[in-house]
Image (tube, rainbow, N blue to C red; front, side, top):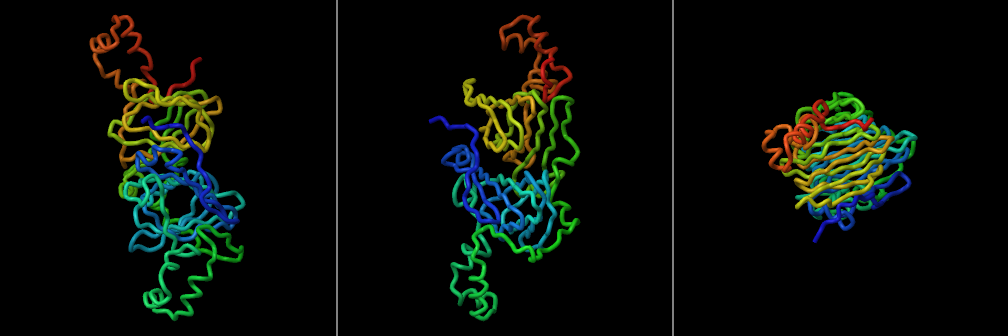
Length: 356
């Protein structure tokens, strides 16, 4: 049975007046389950507070919009309190406890993409909350909690019952949370919009790659990532992941066309991508995109911390490495056509500006 690769939008899972949590369902986007990938978004309004929780999946978080504060506690480590803003990427390994807060008027929106191969449900994240009406403490008797923390049962009942919110709450403006520590960002977060560019092609596009060199924690997560900004009407060269990794792409802004070609040269996807869409390219399938006039930006994770991607066209394209005789025999053409084929895109790699 063929798998539907059509891009999808996230749907609301839960929320309150403090914000909402959205997720992509493996029922609607089957490649999530097929590839053991989870995808979700957190949107916090002013004074919105996402209660402390841990997850059954390692993730990469990417700030799509706004400014806020994130609390991160690695196993057996101290709490890190980070100021976060649009363009920030954070690697969240297994066992990490996080909380998120927005004190600004602008909505804070965070994208989560991660590996669900060890999750309770393939293709979905499951969060375990430390506080709130659905916290893990609600499942224990007051006796167990009081003995574990050496507290009076009356105090335990207050701790467990006081926070009636579920997952996301809105704090009173008078509530003060820890102030961010600028040193805590070191090794914990990288701003992809400010980082040095790995690829920069005039009128083509730009890429920042997230890997173990600039954010070592992605090695623990087991995922690489990149932020790609394709200029208006520019094209991204057809290419594929040559290390059997899946590519999971979220369209941050703009729009454009995409084509994906799979087994036996069959085109398995041809559609228009828009902001908010998520789609997944299967292993070894070839993908290419052309931006609309306003351009297109996307954030992707690749299911290996240091991905290797092969491009088929451009100055670094695979065909450039093949001998003239192989190209002529492969296409069944003469040397004149082969020379035209080889001479094009001699100075352009990965991104191609629009035709004159």
